[in-house]
Image (cartoon, rainbow, N blue to C red; front, side):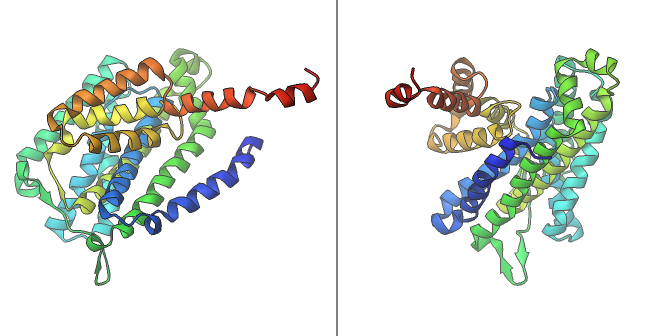
Length: 328
């Protein structure tokens, strides 16, 4: 059942979706379109990472691992077994789901620093496997992945086609997060985040709801990884770099942890920030760290919440004429 606020916001969401659909018609520059597509890709990863981290309180770094697993699984399926990149999307999602079970079943029983260490060890372990099975993964050279095609049309020469592929996946991530948030699963998840002991006493099984959310987020991130690999045409071990972990966490922190649109805003800020300072390759991780620190100091709840608070303050201020009319 929709709330009154949901009904009020529905026209805004419809207009926003229409504007997003018109982006390729407005932006003709291919490189700018590339940045927008990458913003969508990282927005998907950040949104699903936020589902487990912001809503579920599971502080882990495995989301990027699932993203990488999806990309490699799709690439291996296409190169080694001749699978279509379209089928590779499901292969990537399924592989990431399987990986989430491998690490989630044992690690979600712990929390805090133990969960971070376990998922970081898993992340490094998958990276080592990629280097070891170089006959399939390409090792340090990376793996060339076929592009998407529709009949005789290759998407390589049509960036807008890629955009219209990734946009529905981003919207699906947002909608699924919203549905989970409003469902019993979401309420149980947030209750567990706030107090696992109290949630358990109330009859909630924290482990079960954490695992379900963990697997769901991994599946969508795996699909995003498969798209990423085919879009760029290559996937390599740099996908496991620590700087990408920092960037992903930065998107959530800067945008707003535990908010619906915060990760999207954060992915936009980080993606374009990295591009602005592309000439300072060696210093970009330091600059991103500085931005995260500034966000924590001046907008600790994220940019989205900060802007919402500013808008609420503006609305609460009455004009002098309005004050006199109301008899104040």
